Image 1 (spheres, rainbow, N blue to C red):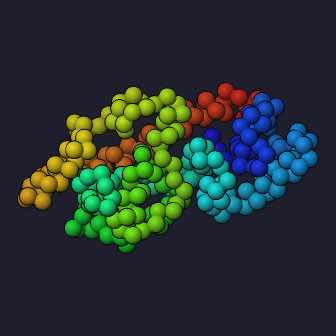
Image 2: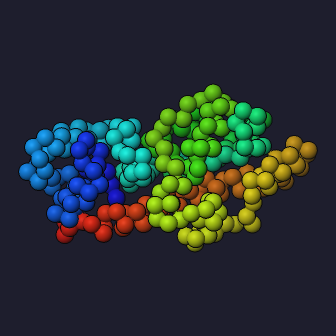
Image 3: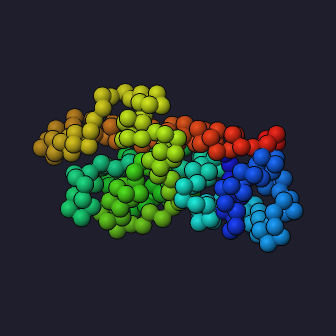
Length: 251
């Protein structure tokens, strides 16, 4: 589903009105007729569309993130797919105030980069990874990864954010990331490692076991890279559930 299929960013257009437009064949902005809505709302939609085309041409994801409801931010994915930065962190515990970030993996446009505490994990390095991203994606990152990074490195992660835990719930996928990966058929090269294992591996590395760091990094990188596949899977399901089920005959 693309941004151009959406009308809910407009004040006065809720999901019920949007679905009615789709059923009437108005599945893209080009097909909108203001006479289908009241004069005030119709004018608002026309004004939004005119501005939105310009913002799309400019690649302005912030504009759309501000206007779409939080639960619909997944709709930005198709337009900005090559500019999505998927990331995942490992830590020594659950408290951003007391514990430390040990590794952070970023996956964007098919490439994965991992930053390691004591080697190359710095505030500048973290900010550089987000610099070219129009959209960031995590799993439970709004409650965990982002607050940890912001507290630990005094950075601001203000790029539009799709926390995949919530779109997963919209399509009936619940539980932790590993359980959801299994439910959608995502396989890992290594045996499952828990958060406690990640803490243990870091401690073993600090004690001189370089192999423990290799295992931790591999696990962390796979977490980040698998988010890209999960995003594709979940947005396809949402597209079918939200859009395909309601639209009229127009593509």
